[in-house]
Image (cartoon, rainbow, N blue to C red; front, side, top):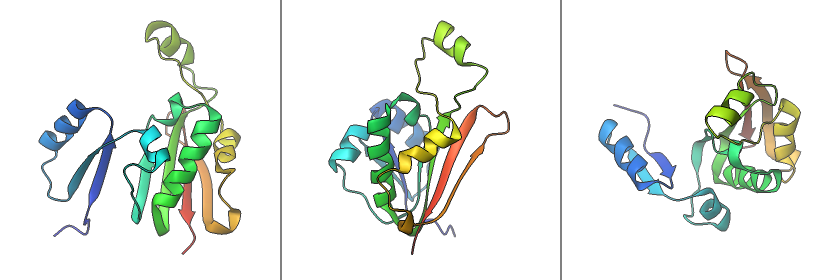
Length: 148
């Protein structure tokens, strides 16, 4: 029996939600249609998660919005929960290719810039903060644990 009670999946695209639900038929999956803008506005109201993780989202957000969303993600996490944010690295080797051939305009961030997203989170509320990169050194992760 799985220890996972609920695995919430938030996406703004209904087709993506349908695909995930079809490919991962697990009883604990809770699909939620929503957006970063909605999360910032408090819709849907979420809380108490042991892990809050965003992939590829922060690549599209300017700093002011990214800071607010990082704060909201932190608020959604349960005491002792983890928040992980990923972002393409400022020195990624593929930026030119992605921008030229994929029309992918991103906000690239170095480790210190990801740490800067914690501006609205009091240090006393964090028991652990670290940054690290993926094996290919193109993606930076900001990984933090909320104080109990």
